[in-house]
Image 1 (tube, rainbow, N blue to C red):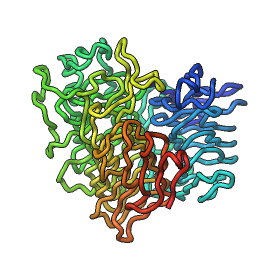
Image 2 (tube, rainbow, N blue to C red; image 1 turned 180 degrees about the vertical axis):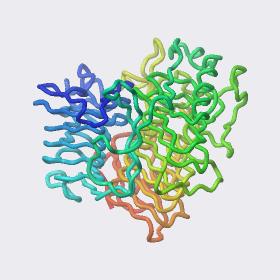
Image 3 (cartoon, rainbow, N blue to C red; image 1 turned 135 degrees about the vertical axis):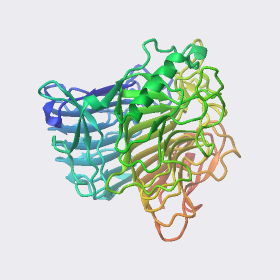
Length: 562
């Protein structure tokens, strides 16, 4: 995990791979696993792409005889690449659960292979686009884009095509110039140039590193297998947090080196147009009082938060903490990992200069062995208007690292501990209260209540992949859904949106995949539910607003559509 390959050119073509091998690539992993012993391996030797998370590749060109293979799932984007020949987003029959390809050109074929779903944004496609299981969504793509609708020979598939996104904000990136100087390139937001790729060198601000703070993690990283030490904040954590905040207060951009940052208080963004960019998917662990890792103050437009992982923390008092109490320092008392804007403060944002979250991955659980004490309420909250999300995976862990000597609690899934009720607590993945907020490539998984709560107007989601929690018990999930649009919303569009069930512990039946007001202003294009697996009698009773067919074990892996 936490591997990034990034070219350092101003244009994608400045760093090029030639010959036979494609340069950066990801094959199916864990090929030693046998199908008789591991329920998600289709056949011996197939391997897995289902846990190929937290890696990325960007800003290079490929002109090789072998295809660029990027067989991944969530939190593993491929972006700003120029590929002369083919791209493959899978590896044989290995199961794969979806990802994001953004801002690219492919001269040959794009093969989605065995991907359940995939989001492709602003890509020029020279050959065919083929493969995939249930949901392929294209936004702002050019060339040989497949037609929207059904796919011959694959009854379960729907293709959704959005001609162009409402707005486009590409990810900031680092450049090493010809005279050996470092620059941070920050592409301008645009509502005009929203179709096709932007791969050249003339796309935005070039910021000298004299105004950039490069931040390193602590030199003596903590051992996650020593739970007490891992969850104890000390003066070094306070020093690093203070250093980061001081740089922000000076108006500098932050570039976070690979590693883990144990925050003692939130990083507060008070200056418009600031960038927080992670390398190697730098990991920020939230303060232990329920405060977010990052808080963007109200009426601060143009912020870019990109390339980072934010993680829920052990919630406790600690005499070494700056905020020495339990309870969030968010003004409304709700705990979170990122807040854009402030609760109750009016902030329409700036349509010409939106803030953006790009390749931002939030999680509660995974590494931290204190599963019962790691928690938050909402992973990300958007209070401001005119905010763009581009590839967000918001994940309450369904599986965690095993403790030393611990036996797996599910022998069919022997590599990890399977999370159970009372562990890794999170209520909601994403809450949107701002108007004109748009999400491109949104993944929300396993939280204990509604996965997505949308309160803002004139917003939308282009591609949504959602798994309901595996571990809830009967009676504890009544009334909750994957995608909830509040009754006060009068305008909202969701395109290529799916909600899945895999209730592993109890025969839970969710009422619906989607809920929204029936006022004529809400559009869901190609919505579906699907039962992946689960306990006998479990599933999703209806698709939208308690209407539509049931997804259960009898229809396993076959999407239910209105």
